[in-house]
Amino acid sequence: MKNFRFSRFMLIAGLLFIYLPMLILVIYSFNASRLVTVWGGWSTKWYAGLLDNTQLMNAVLRSLEIATYTAIAATALGTLAALVLTRVGRFRGRTLFGGMVTAPLVMPEVITGLSLLLLFVAMAQLIGWPMERGVITIWIAHTTFCTAYVSVVVSSRLREIDRSMEEAAMDLGAKPWKVFFLITVPMIAPSLAAGAMMSFALSLDDLVLASFVSGPGSTTLPMEIFSAVRMGVKPEINAVASLILLFISIATFLLWFFTRRAEESRKRAMAQIKEQERASQA
Image 1 (tube, rainbow, N blue to C red):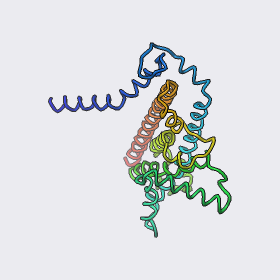
Image 2: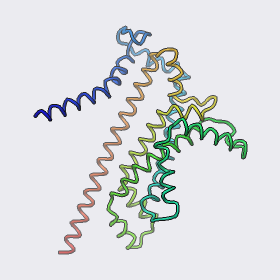
Image 3: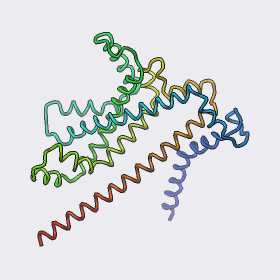
Image 4: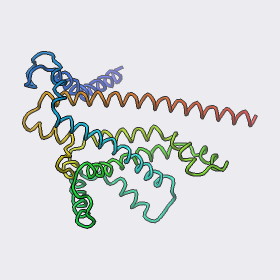
C-alpha cells in the first residue's frame, strides 16, 4: 500500500510538473491586462489581436510550413535508413553508416548549425546554390536533424515485426516493392506516424539550427518569440502558444485514435490468418 501511494504521488507530481506551467500559460492568455504578471480579468482580445500582428502570424505559418515539409522528408529518409540498417546484411561501411545516421542525436545543435552554415556558404561559392539562406536551408537543416529520430523509431519497429507474412508474399510471387507498400508499411504505420509527429514537433520547436541557417524574411516562430521575450513577454505570445498547444493536442489525439484502430485491425487480421492456418492443418 505504501509503495502504491508513493507511486501514485510521484505520478501526480510528475504530471503537475509537466502540465501545470502549460495550464498557467493558457489561463494567462485570457488575461485582460497588458502586464503578463498582473491579472486584469478575463478577455479574448489578445486572440483577436493576433489577426493584426502580421509579423507573428507570418512566423507561425512559416514554422508550420517548414515543420510539415520536414516531417514528410524526415519520415521518408529515416525509413530508408532504418530499412538499410535492419534488412540489409553485413556490408562494408555498415558501422560507419549507422554511426552517421544516429550522430545528430548526440551532436550539439550549435555544432550542427555551424557546420551546416559553413556547408551552405561553401556550396553557394562552388555551385551558386543556395543563393541565399531562407526556408529551404532551414528545411534541409531540420530534415538532417529529424531523420536520425525517425530512423531509430522505425528501426525498433522493424526488428519486432514478424517477417513471415513478407516471406509468404514473396514466395507467392509478389515484387519486393509491392510487399513493402502493401505489407511492411501497414505493419510499421504506428512508428511512421510517431516519427512524423516527432519530426513535426522538433522542427516547430527548433531555435538553434534555424538561427544559424536562416536569412532575411525567414524568421520562424521560436526565433520571433525569442527576440520578443528579450523586451518582455507580450500577451499575444501567450495566445499564440495556447493555440499551438490546442493544435498539437488535437493532432496527437487523432494520431492516437487512428493508430489504435490500425493496430486493432492488424491484430484481427493476424488472428484470422492463424485461425485459417489451424483450420487448414486440421
